[in-house]
Image (tube, rainbow, N blue to C red; front, side):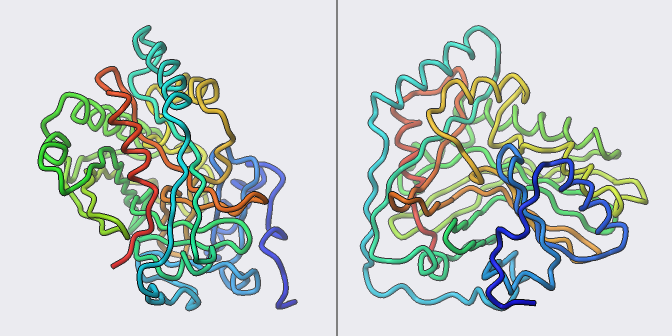
Amino acid sequence: MNGNLKWSTYLLSNSYRCYEEMNRLGKNRIPFLFILDFECKEPVLIPLDCVDETGIMYDMEGHTNGKSERIAAKGDFFFRKEPVAYDVYLKAFGKVMEHLLKGNSYLVNLTFPTRIFTSLTLKDLFLISSSRFRLFVPGKMAVFSPEVFIRIRNGRIYSYPMKGTADASDPLLAEDLLSGHKERAEHYTIVDLIRNDLSQIADDIKIERFAYREFITTHEKMLIQVSSEISGRLPANYHEHLGDILNALLPAGSITGAPKTKTLDIIREAETYERGYYTGVFGIYDGSGLDSAVMIRFIEQTDGGLIFKSGGGINAYSDPLIEYKELIDKVYVPIA
């Protein structure tokens, strides 16, 4: 095939076609890469042996197409953030809080775009990054996500919802991740949501690990985050229902909230931009197992420059200034 083939050749017109094609590929054990935007309006599905022709690079915990080798950052590279003004954030926060206090939702993931200015190209930002899940789509986006969406191994499905991020150098914030009312309520809510989501497509649901902490090194500071591990047993014929499984679970609970349907309406009301591929998912099916990640820690190439999209969970205990600071803290490039 043509070596100049662009990734947009593999854009599908709607989610139904995407999920049906996933089912077909899975039934025939044909490996593929999928990139699904937040509302699955522009899904991308590429047979794995065609990915190199698109210029896309991926690295799923070492499972890579061989084109995503990291490069060293050249000294202290220039990286400046221009976040949304606090009063703009506060207005959206107020809308979310109004719904929370009315009982329309228990948890809402509120996000905003931040303009960034850097001496590096989008591709270089991808190549210097160090993360469990990385994706580069030429002219479109770079992702370096720490969060698993789902993983399928030997007939079991695993999910690792992440809720709670703080500056590891601040002992009070770090301790609050596990003991504070806001963070504890947020994590319990999302674990319960994901457990319920998995019960739609699997049985024998188990919480394997609860509220464990991980550390991330960024180009600015060390961050601490909290995750849990939940698993379930899939039906024996799950390969031919991969699209149905993803359709049942999306959008990811950790980047929407609970209850999911009503919370999506609140997000559309409060946020002032289109998320696009941000907070969607990408992943690899290798003919046997499946790995996928939530597309957080996300940079988008636009006509006006680079945009970094970030956010966090809001519940009734949330402090707007702390949430605003977390949104800005999440605008970073993870480096080893």
